[in-house]
Length: 591
Ligand code: OXD
Ligand code: MN
Image (cartoon, rainbow, N blue to C red; front, side):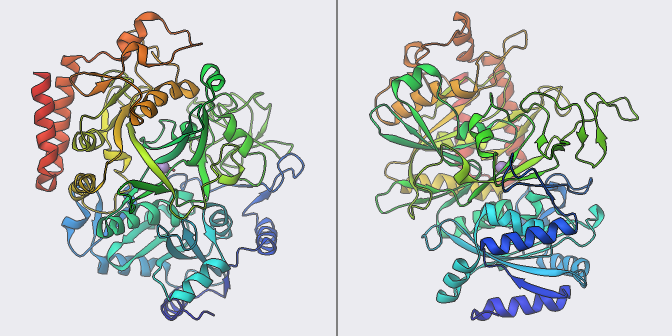
């Protein structure tokens, strides 16, 4: 079975609990992939797509009640409630194990339990962490093959060192939403997920290990596990500046990570290199600087809205070796989703498995979409044309700038730079995104999402912000911190900034600031570029737009301060004093 004592013991305990008919160790080979796909085709867990048009690609549908992460059913299980903090759902570990074990007990009878040894980060890198996922889902195995480094090489490494690993137990059970639980036990380095088959809940290396568990490890070991993309921006001299950026969902993180430079900047010689689109692990190296890796090996992205205009590099990546989940299945065994590439198919089978035509209505007269709005693709990062050649580099890439962003129709300027590291942490702590009328509920309503980690921080949010403040003091120098807002609108509701590839015009200023090559002026909220600092060649931007994009409206900011106060108060006494001092400094500047 394995020479790793702890692993052996844990697997036999789990086997006794779940009672699978068979245990299969995954080695990560191509032969194994073929065999598992064949089995999954037989039981209809996946469908083979047209192998000429989409070689190596398959299609999967989840249960209708299981299409997204379930934050309400996600818990941090710690001995003290305080350690989970005021934002996380909390349970006592004893209670968590009791409930999860009662649900999963005997649930793998008649099923196979797959053992997936996986590494988050290059195998053997000082950044990397190993996990072992036990699952009764072939879909999970096939996804983990893409999203992580997995199989024999990882097991060999683990055995050689008798090393630590995160115990990740997943059981589909009955996909019963009423008994679904996603439990994290940071004190035991353990994750248990039951009654779900949706990626974010069951690919346990991703949100569960690489963010919730890893954020606790990072707190204890002095590094950062963040919900951030990493990209390299190569300037005309060939120098590459790496940045890490955090945005709440639906703000275009994946698009930004692989943007196509606009004409003017392309001509100048700018290029983008994609390191990661979702998670960054960052450590202070012996040079005193912050270095980062992307612990993942693939992308688990949202289909709807992705097309050759919004993200041509992603569309190129999806031409092969992709798992498509909950998208529209076309009669020619290819796929489509809303706001995808034209033409809109005349018919197909929708994500629920029913015949579909454009414009069909449900019993309430609402248009039925072919793909679920959160339909996903799982694709190897190596498929992305802009992938960095430093993915396997054991020390990752040096981070010069950290960028926070949100969706704000008013208030936040296109870009501003923090005055100090601590002010930058405050900018991240007060990150927020507005809901639009078309999206979820009341327009203008703001959800505070510190560092885009609200659903992913595995411990007390106050302690997390203190950890950020402290780490800044250890770096020489720390990265500069910026805030961007691609979504500011004019009084008629039109976007003031074109976004997408043109965002590189803003990033160019960021890069030049990091290299001491660009000027700035000090505004009430931080440093902003002068008009002449942004390269706007080839872009038709009405003159007044730039002025509006950088305006700081005192009334709006006064209202924002009220929101921040309310949010900070909700974090209670664990919020570090430094955040209140930054609040007071900002208030004073605005007064
Ligand atoms: C994701 C998310 O799937 O943030 O990346 O929800
Ligand atoms: Mn994410």
